[in-house]
Image 1: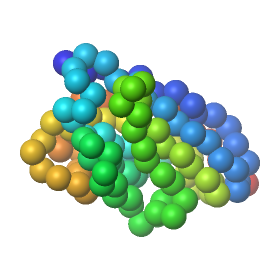
Image 2: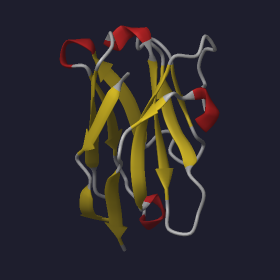
Image 3: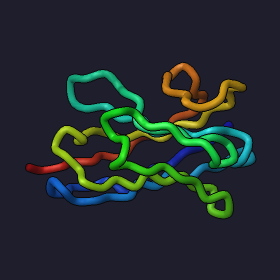
Image 4: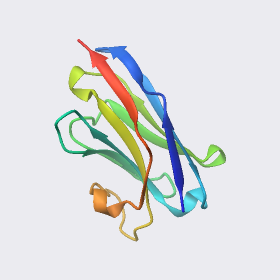
Length: 126
């Protein structure tokens, strides 16, 4: 079992920045890849970013590439999503997820993930 707890969401103006955190517990942090997804009201959950077990490979959706950065800190069992130049269309509940699949990055499909956090709300005002 893996437990995931997100934090760092909030209300920010367009053009602002936020850093989301996801603390993992339960199994060796380096044994699984991590991803971030988001779900806006009335829309399906969509892939945002993923990072490999080692942290050496990352992948982003086209909508956030060059604005968001995913990283992981093994010492803190934490994965981060640094978000800059935020837009109103980034408003959503953001979820982190853990993947034990043998597949490698990009890992952009929900079915490739085994455990999910409860989500954290990000609201970007115009």
